[in-house]
Image (cartoon, rainbow, N blue to C red; front, top):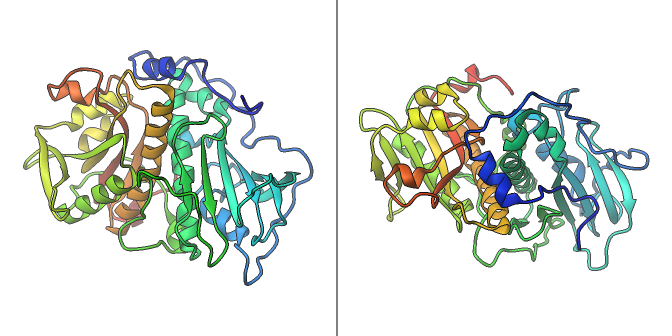
Length: 383
């Protein structure tokens, strides 16, 4: 049954094909409100008791805006438009009473929407959906891949926040089977364990080096270009390994590097070194494919998620993009831990990587990317 609040393109397969084409978006339109108009009065999130999951801290570390415009948040978003909306299904063991709530990330408040459904798990389940208009306002027909990637980033931000607060591995649903919600993250109360574990082992893991600290999560931002400087092999391997572990299944991962030996690198089977996937300078082509962002040609390296063939069905498209956003988010934190500047790159046109490498066309497209450089963090600005 369709959910009355679900937003979807009429045909996601056609929407992705058009987004991948050379067609340029039209003029910007109005983005509308930055937060869904939740009914009822905004409510503060109570302080957590010693045995409760601290929802106030969880949401502050993952989704809450840190400025009045709502652009600056711990989870990156294409154009800082932040289309992802969050409903919280709260069970026992939380700092909020059980029920269903809408979250306002600008005011860091919740709106009570009703009672919790039967069978609600202890802890909280964050159900993620999108208000497409926000992203469509700037990206037009290119919006739907970006909406899905943003949702994957938001899911990863919730997982990292839970780990920073000491939660056991949260449960994540990024299977692409539903339009509403697009993704769900279940976080158990302290000393609890989530039953929402994927059977295929996908979208698990965390950045290299263990759980993040709250300070790390609040400080992470996308670095502005340019991003010069080639990462060390050790740093590049760590970023690739994080992405590969978190984004298994429909995706493959490699990184484009420049001189002295330009090419595409991927983790070797031994897990400790890199191997050459393809030789040759790829960054100028990637810059042309990424909506003509010329600075990518001079980035130190570009992590690439690729796959999602042209004949993928809607569930496959959702799953591949959700997992790509999730994995790039974790890889971004790993990059920062290795002293790198990093910036997600989500808009890709005519980016048929497989065909460019001599394989059959339409089988292996760039889905998402993370540009990397060695610029010191002191030179970064928030976006």
